[in-house]
Amino acid sequence: MPSLTSDDVRSLQMADADERLSAFDRFAAAPLPTPQQEIWRYSRIGELQLDSYRYGTLSTTITGAESVLVDDATIDAESELDLFAELNRAFMAPIHIRVPRGNVLEQPIVITHTLRADGTACFPRLVIDAEADSEVTVIELFVSDESVTGIIMPVLQVRAQQAARVKYLSVNELGSKVWQIANQQAVGDRDSNTLLSTVALGGDYARVRTHARLVGQGGSTRQVALYFADGTQTHDFRTTQEHIAPKTTSDLLFKGAVNDQARSVYTGLIKIGPNARGAQAFQTNRNLTLSDGAWAESVPNLEIETNDVKCSHASTVGPIDEEQRFYLESRGIQPDIAERLVVLGFFDEVLGQLPVGSHAPELRERISAKLHQAVVPV
Image (cartoon, rainbow, N blue to C red; front, side, top):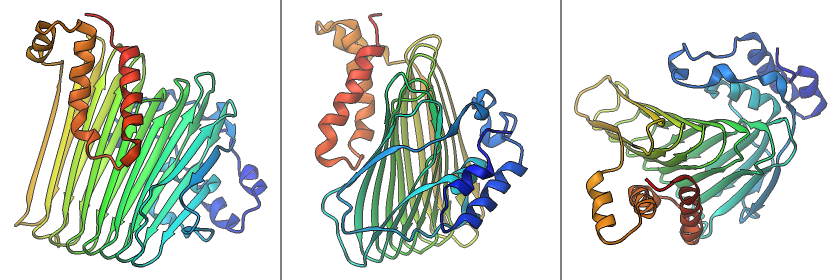
C-alpha cells in the first residue's frame, strides 16, 4: 500500500473532500498496473515504488491569466483515464482557466511548476474551459533540479465549445531523478479546433497519455510532440484520436530521438465511431536511434466502425540517414556537429507547429543544448 493515505486527503480540508476521498478509495481498491496490460506494455511501471514518496506540492507561477482564472473548477471524476488520474483527483491542486464567449487572448498564459521538495508526489491539474468562439494559448512547464527526486502526476482537461480555438503546450524539463505520469483529455465541440503539444526533454521515466475526443460536427484536433532521451531515460506516449461526430478531423505528428541506453515508446489509436461519417484522421510517428544501445517502439492502430472515412498511419524507427551526415561532413562540418544539425532538422517540422510564439528561439536553444551534451563524436 502506498504511503499516501486517506488521512492525507482529509488533511487538505477541501470543500470537495467527499469526492476526493471517493477517488482515493477507487485508487486504493484497485491493483497497480503492470507491463502485462496492453496500455502499459513496454513501460517501466514495474519499477515504480510509490510508497517511497510522500504527499507534496509544487511551486507554481502563472502569468497572463489574470482575467480568466476562476476558482470553481468542476471535475468529472468518471472521465479519469487510469488509477494515477484518480490519485490526482484525490490530491489535486487545480488551476481553472475559463475564457468567456468571443474572447481572444492575444498573449499566451504561461504556467511554471517547479519541484523543490525531495521525495514528494505532486498532483497538479489544469482545466481549460474555452467558451464558444474564444481563443487561448497555454504553455505549461515542469522543471526541477538534477538533485531532486520525486514523482509528478499531472492531469490536463480541455473543453473547447463551438468554434473555440485552444492551443496547449507542455514542456518537460525535469531532472533525471524525477518520474512523470501525465494524463491529458480534450473534448472538442462543433467547429472547434484544439492543439495538444508536448516537448519532452527531462525526467527519468516520463509518460503522457492523451485522449482527444471530437464530439461536435466539423471539430478538429492536432497532437504534436518532440521528445529526446539520453542516458537511461524513457519517454512513453499513448494517444487516442476519437471521432464521435461526423466530418471531424484529427492529425498527429510525433518525432523523437533516443541516444545511449535510452528508450521511447509510442502507441496510438485512431478510433472512428459509427456516427463519424466523413471523418479524416492521420497519425505519424518517426524515431531516430542515435546509438546501438538506444531503443524505440512504435505501434500505430486503427479502429473504424463506419464507411466514408479517410485514415492513415505511419511509423518509422531507424538511425540517421548516412547520406545527410556525409553531405554535411563533406562540407567540412565535424561529425558531432553534423549529427546535431541532422537531428535539429529532423525536429524542425514539429518545432514549426508548436504554439510558442516569441518563446521559439529559447526553446530551440534548450533542445540544441541537450543535443550538444548528448551527441558525441562518431
